[in-house]
Image (cartoon, rainbow, N blue to C red; front, side, top):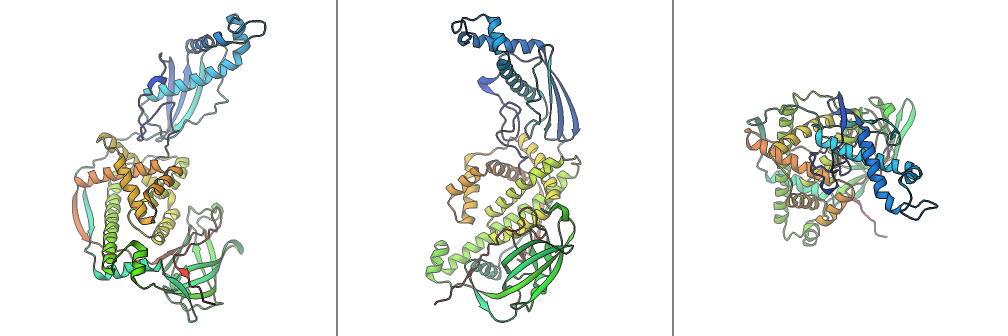
Length: 501
């Protein structure tokens, strides 16, 4: 997870990716400013800073600015560069004042960043236009900034952790193979009643207090025990749709999550109605030589099954890391009772979602599984983000203490794994991450994993049997309560069978 920090999040200086001030190079002012800096702490992750710049520094900056201007100053009645200093100062006072203000702010922020002991995780929040350079006396400005909280590192060496283990069986491979083949299957019409694992095409209508709040026409949905929306879960969906035929209507109620896009309906009940348009069965493709080549260049079914076994082991590794991380997080965050600003949590929820999806992709999960987990994360975004952000601050501190960093090879490995899941080239995946500004998310993900590996290397483990999570949730990209992102086209993995004319 990243603390919403990018290359623009500076206090006038350069920072490394952990937010630590570093040398600014040739642009650093030759002479330090005489600053009076008062810092208060409205919250654990906030600092309010009041800065007073001495009159002597202001006059020095004006003197330097006019000194640079004199050789090229153009004043009517005088040759260029020949006007008296007082005349130039009177004519260009306002223009130079803006320049001096910018230089004073930039240099003072840079000096504050070097001198202060807090680590900024956002840009200073202040109104540039409201800051003025006075004609007499010192110049004062103030700002609020989000910072990494100060805390004592909890004990992280020698933790006792549980670890899930499993030797995957042929039955596990069969189940995973069927899930994989469903992505290439065709939906064929079915005249009989719907059963679990069938597909229905349905018009979905959501109402609250008798008023329609969202609708989705012709949504294609696989019948599973749970139907997951962006903002709610409908448990018992398979029972609800059992026996449904074309023309039937089925209804149910869901309670929207407290993070639902429609803020007016958060935590309230919404009535869902499904008008069944038709029922379809999934027809899986045959494992022909051509098909095996098409889906991954496999020569035989045995090669495909070996690849599936490897992918299951990657997913087991993900589960091991997730469960270990959960235990480590609970132990480390136990004493992290500091409040996090609501604005920071709001901004970070989207970044945490991106990080979680990226982690799932590099671990080999299908898009359907990722959508289900993504909806679950959306429904619990605020609480999950708060825990993840506190965990991030602690892991970041450990990384700094242990001097853990990221090199280009780490990026290449992560991008290769993401590309392998999506079927795209590593170059294209990297370009997409850079375009979306997610390379900092990837970096923090790598750093956190390295810290977790270090913590686990010094932990004591107790192995426990692992039961793979059954795919019992169908996820659709629709918000049941409407609001932002209320209706998004559903992407189904199976394809409609085209009838020959």
